[in-house]
Length: 293
Image 1 (tube, rainbow, N blue to C red):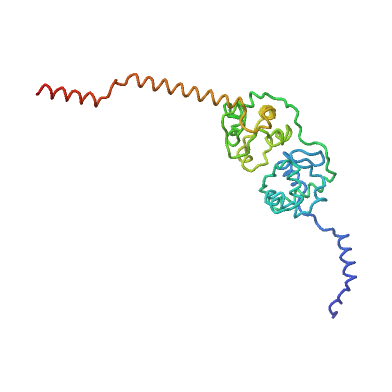
Image 2 (image 1 turned 180 degrees about the vertical axis):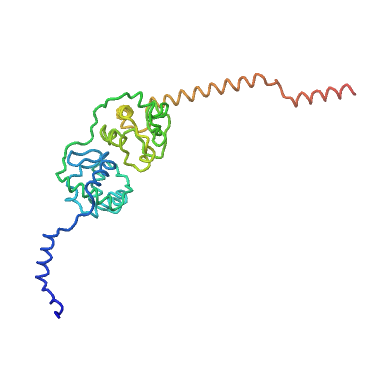
């Protein structure tokens, strides 16, 4: 009966290990086909693969520039990763106007599939693209109505003002749950806004419009309105403070309210009995006392 095989020398083990890798290559993590679907649903609004910068960087070749662990951390929670002090994460945050990538509720397996898809596409990131600040097509007047909810969205989604504020003569107030959108066109441009409205990457926004997408015509109108707001904000020193038109509306509204209150108080005062009631009762009592004497 044969005894156990002799132990291999370190050199022989290394040669055997290399031959196994050549004959039986290590299986890659993730499914590129699934990764493509996830990318087109979750990532496409802000990123391209080899077509240039959009809202965020071009992701072509990212797997050659960063480790799998790095990509997992950034995708899962970029803000936390940036706060940890990672130099590359901080550099991306600064380069893209401190517009953070929202946390993505993706499992490790799904992130691996996205990585597999990016590896399958390959290519080199383009320096072109970027924020397109040209005037978009669309009706800004319709965009105002859709933004503040005076006209309902076709598919019943919530109006923008439910969560966002805006410094614009046509907008009074606004939500504080999400960022102010006065200068959003400067940060994202037309393509970025269209991408986000078409396929919301933010968890709360994604949930709000799930099954109730914004139509292409409505997106065009909102783009035009946000461009108009951006242009007006530039004229009023980058949107700092309240525009003079908005301030004038508040002033006139306050004066009108004061006039209405004065008229109301005047009408109430007119029906008021002249003199003091207690004084008249006192005078009558004195008169009665004099007669009795």
